[in-house]
Structure formats: C-alpha cells, structure tokens
Image 1 (tube, rainbow, N blue to C red):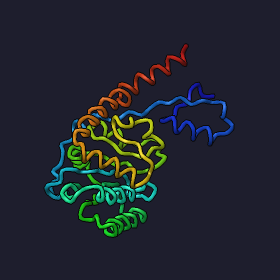
Image 2: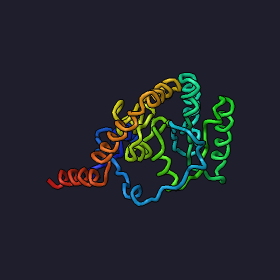
Image 3: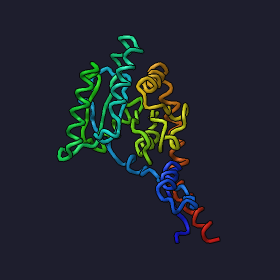
Image 4: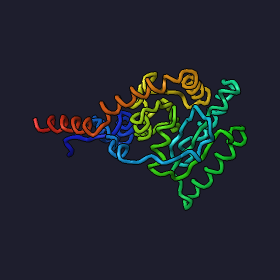
Length: 248
C-alpha cells in the first residue's frame, strides 16, 4: 500500500528484491542517509600521543567492531604485505591503528580481539600495530586528523558510515569493492576500491606511502563528495524531490 519505499543503497535495493519475491514488481527508491557533520565540528580532539609510537609518518586507521564478519584480519595481512614493498626506513615510518567497538560482555568481541593480537604477532607486525578498544569521539577525531588513510575491510556492507566519516575528515579510504562503499567512494578519486585481498590492499597502501600528496588531493575530493551527496542538505533535497513526485 506504500506510495514509496526507500532503501539506503542501490545494493540494498537488490537485497530487497531478492528477499521480498512477492514485491518483485516494486522498485525501491534510494535515499542516501546523511552524515551528522555537526558531531565532527563540536568535538575537541583528544591527545593520542601515548597511543602511537613517535616518528610515525604514515598512520593507517581501521575502524570497525571487533567482529569476525568485519574481516579486520585483512588490514593486518595487508600491513604484512606492505612491509615487503618498502625499504626498512619507510617501513619504520608506518603504523596501523585498529580501533573498534568492544564490549567485554560479548564473547566474540573478547575472542576476536585476542585472535587479532595473535595474528599480528604471527605476522611479525605487532610492533607496528596499536589495538584500541571502545574509543571515544575525541580519540576518533584525533585519529582521523593524524591518519593518511582509512582501511575499510568488511564485504557487502549495506551502508558503512566509516567511509563517509573518513572522507569528511579528508582521509582517503581503501575499501572492499562491494556493498555500500561502491556507491560512496570514487575509485582513484576519494580512495581505492579493492578485492578483499591483502595484495590489493597493500598495493593501494603503497601508493599512499609513495605519494604523500594523495592524502591531500583525495582528502579534499572526499570532503566535497560528502558535502554534495551525503550532507543533511543533500538528504533534505533528495527527500523533498521524492515527496513532490508523490504529490503530483
């Protein structure tokens, strides 16, 4: 009976049609959610000097919950592959922060955190990784401000707010070439879309290390992308156009 059905991504529209077979003749409209930009403008960044070893020029950041489906191991494996692409001086300037939602009452959070720590040790990259659990908004802003790139590792995410947050904060994003990021990230413009393979992620990370200007150019393009497509103003205008269509 609905005059209009919204989904938050084209990807989700496909899931809708595959799930609700009796509504196969219905074509949902895409209404992209907006980013709460004000939350980034009012937060005072925290001091994170004690989290990151000194003289780290290339700080990579992964943000996601400590859940296995988020494929955080991909970030560690890509870091390991990156090591083989750099000389010792360059490698010593690289660091990865794995920041994620963590609840000690959730068994998977506890187990997966330990699994990732074990993997980092196995790959001999543990000295180049900081694991941060249940970080604050103030810490998140500081991490964005100090990072050269954000790694977004889950596949088939319906939305994925982290890439939008990163782009607004002028951070390029390396993400899996599926789900929501395909519609938010512009490949080779605001970041890189890769298959979920350590080799491809490490190749993109190497580009950031080799050409530090990419941080500025892709970061600036990311901020423009968010303001044009995913701001509250863009959401309002998009919703208004749909309402006008219904009332005609």
